[in-house]
Amino acid sequence: MLQRATELMVNFDLGLAGLKLHRTKSILPDGKEHEIVLPMGVHQVGDREYLRTLMQESRGTQALFVLLRYLLPILKNGGIAYIDEFESGLHPHMVAAVIDLFFHPLSNPRGAQLIATFHTDYLLRDKLHKYQVYLVEKDSSLSSQAYRLDSIKGVRNVDNLLEKYHAGAYGAIPQLP
Image 1 (cartoon, one colour):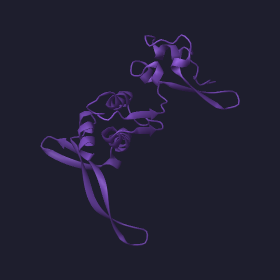
Image 2 (image 1 turned 60 degrees about the vertical axis):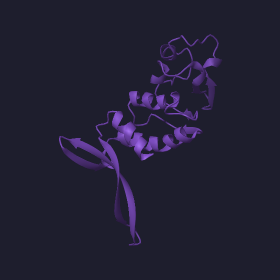
Image 3 (image 1 turned 90 degrees about the vertical axis):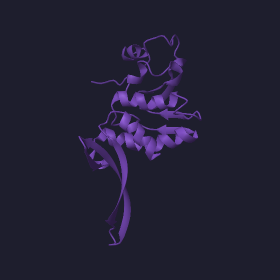
Image 4 (image 1 turned 120 degrees about the vertical axis):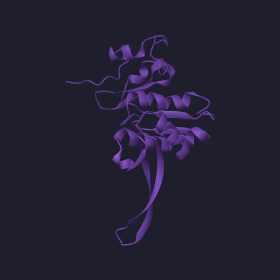
């Protein structure tokens, strides 16, 4: 999994030349020594290589590493990945690139599925179809109701889903003061 995560993170233009695992010792509160493994980002500047712990990398790089830790085994073996607030810390283009892993047989040979919540509406532009989108709307009693976008009468796949969503045609728009 580390090899595949490294491949993806290097190709995703994060400024990384690679990833390595670094073993180090830590002292536990009871005074005992304990070995831990830290993921390290590898940076190449000229002919020099610099290592930084992932905790020193950007929030987006950290978020992607953690997300891939959950998604790569599902993509390899099949199954369903459930992720809440999938896009947290990620650039919208990065979100789309990671979701693309589920659409391609080479990266998803066993037909793994993704069920995720998003606060970004960017994916409505061209990534998802009406039957792949559930919207959640709170009513006046603060109860939430979820409904699939294709259950709304008149919604077509050729519609600009993002534009219509912003216009309020589908509901599920927060009421801000």
